[in-house]
Image 1: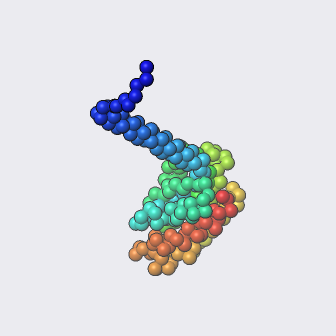
Image 2 (image 1 turned 60 degrees about the vertical axis):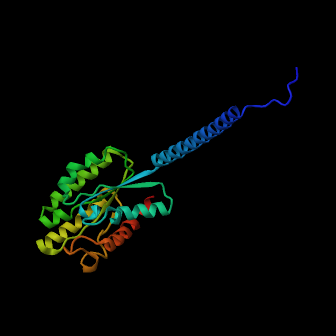
Image 3 (image 1 turned 180 degrees about the vertical axis):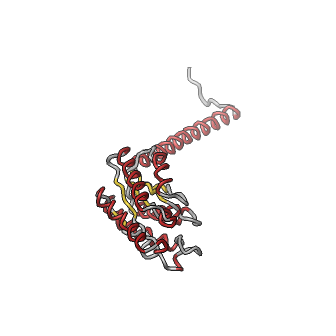
Length: 231
């Protein structure tokens, strides 16, 4: 039997029309959700594949009285990102840290794998007149712990100098700690992390010790010069 000129009631037609729209929107939404999920998964995989650079130090690394984005580790991250290098930085600086307290804390920051460990400690020892042998022993212990936990991790040693307040002999002994440890462990050495900043009033805060944001830009250059060949 042939049915001609079949008319669908308006209400039925509208119901079918809106159902088709809803079905189409639902399908589009599922596709968008799937697309977003894929992007997030891709980003997560990319983050997991990045190597880690951990900066372990005192108030210099922490960026004392500055926004964390102004401290040199963050500036290093900006440069890595601009060059599309697969590294992420972690700022593990702690104001007031000595080599002794750093030695006590370092195992906590070694919970996750690290590929490069930048060690910047000792300034507070020097300002307090801690024995240079004690400072040397603590730095050696930190290096040993890092290498024991992650044998392939590259440790970078940041050198420090202090003013001769405690006497010229003490200042000279203190300064020798870093190149001697670097030679002993065959580590890359940043000769003096505050090079070009120490003693320049406009590059330091009112205390004359901690770098300004402009000072940290110079610190980032000092660190980058030694770090870049390792990447």
